[in-house]
Length: 448
Ligand code: UD1
Ligand code: CA
Image 1: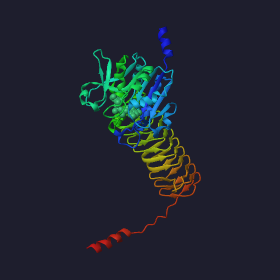
Image 2 (image 1 turned 120 degrees about the horizontal axis):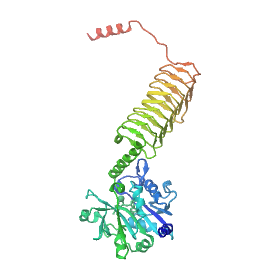
Image 3 (image 1 turned 180 degrees about the horizontal axis):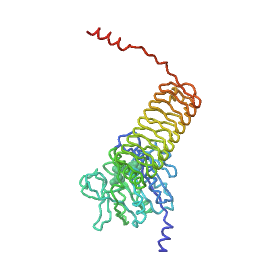
Image 4 (image 1 turned 135 degrees about the vertical axis):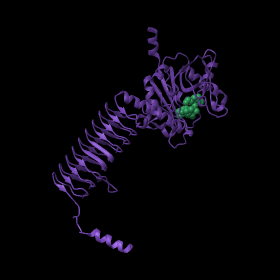
């Protein structure tokens, strides 16, 4: 026990995350590792996941276009100018390794579904080189395959793209390794380019390690946690898995999803206990929902705070810094942007509320539009407590409607309305007696 503790204290750990390369198979102009899962870039998922190792150094290897990206803050950034393979990326990274490091954990930024338990498990590895393997159910998958000796220790990793036959080996390479640092530094200069691809492969280190008398080890883990994302198809598969995980966590915390598989939840969503999320709801970035709220079907939310017992939707759209206070209601086909809807206020049908404050208990009639933009600037609308805005009202901002004021239906309001007054801008109604009778008579004569 004493010996173990001393050993643990003296183990200096580094994590290297490979995130360069073109990601050609994505066929996308966005660098592969910046593609998002549940709204968070893949590279960020991996950086966050490896924190559990409390490493003394984290090195990220990226392409030149990413070198100043904010995601990389707190890591030692290495730029791989030309993507010459995972072995080449590792060579660059190793030049930055602090001299006192004795264990190196290598991860790929395109495996975003990492699970903390698997990562923690790696700390127990004893061999000079440990690799994570996954038992494949579908042998068609293109992962590299781990060849083992008859005792089950890895002796080589081979790529299926160069040798279709090895697809029969069911143990796939997850792309995660632990190296004895000294061994790694000694072996990296010996890596040769693959004759077919002209790239350096990090996977060749296994064969080199064995040849040079080093010990190897294989740790098995679930395939799902190491899904490699190389194409947009795999990106969607990873998203599906992450969505299932996120919603399961919310449900276990007391959030009810009516049909969880139909709704999207961003990684940073906060949802309170007792809240019900109906079918096909999009909970985008920066959404905070308190307890006992109801988000009805087909609503689309981002950058908003919804307080307890508020009702949203169906078919509501909230975006750009919105607060819906306690017990307020936003109904169908209502878009709210950059606004505060105070306690008990209601906008139940067909409205656009932009850059507004809707006072406590106010009622916004169907078809009300805040005209907040003149083509150059945005202006504010203020609606007082308990005001009643009639249907089909056009509010030309900047404008203020006083507390308890009424706005007559169909009005175009261009001037402030004071508290408890009626604002009305309609033309006088006229009635023309028997006009319809005369009109019909004229037409029946014309058509006969
Ligand atoms: C790699 C492994 C394969 C394994 C699979 C697991 C090799 C040769 N093959 O294949 O055995 O089953 O991962 O998912 O390592 N990268 C760089 N610089 C480069 C090339 C790649 O930083 O020059 C980074 C990429 O950003 C990526 C990671 O390394 O995050 C893996 O590269 P990728 O090209 O996706 O390797 P695979 O073909 O998936
Ligand atoms: Ca990959």
